[in-house]
Length: 311
Image 1 (tube, rainbow, N blue to C red):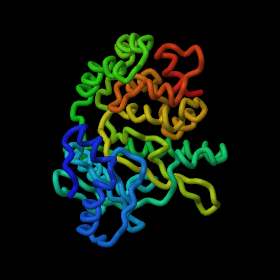
Image 2 (image 1 turned 180 degrees about the horizontal axis):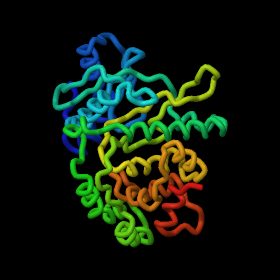
Image 3 (image 1 turned 120 degrees about the vertical axis):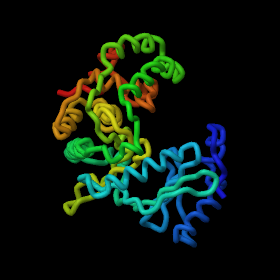
């Protein structure tokens, strides 16, 4: 009952259309024991995600993204109860009609940190950033070996090399001005890290939008959850610091200092900038709009210090 999605054109036509998806969503809910439920679609996210019966979340993955659903359910199984904050408990997963994959999980309490952030006192913002550093450290301390068959890439340096080969073209296609594009090759030649044997389970989008906050007994905000593991990978831990600098500390050196103190390590800003250009979702023009650098920052090395420096 869900239309098959095999191409980007199918995706643009089908995935945003809740009226088109709803009969299949209702049928799947009934199969999962929620007959009569009125699932409510979340407005955020690239995949169709629904709140079901108050305490559950149903996430759908069309055929061309079915692997993401398998990755998410497997990662959630691995992580359940192993981090300082909650992750959704996977309750059921499998295939549905026409190649769709689903994951039914528990719904975590709390509010999106990105939405809560402007209303938080500076002291609470600082404390949440520090807690987030400890949380990412705990994630990276886990042995990702049990996930090796489900989550790639198996060859991290090969993955990096593949991303490196298309990096300039990718940014040019996204509209990056030539004054920046012309710097990329030379910068990556000097700054691209070789991870060697360093391997960690990577969230890859560790950002305020995927962190939840809820009040503690004293009414202060605390981190209550970490969401969205569909793009999880295993690889160099510095890769996860791209989203930290851009979407958690947002170029604030003082906040990055607090984050890295509890994370337990201060990364080389140039290495993180290299991963910013090599990231699966890399879009430097968008990042420059989201976190505009100060006047006078016109080279990638200075931009690296702006976004990922401490002190």
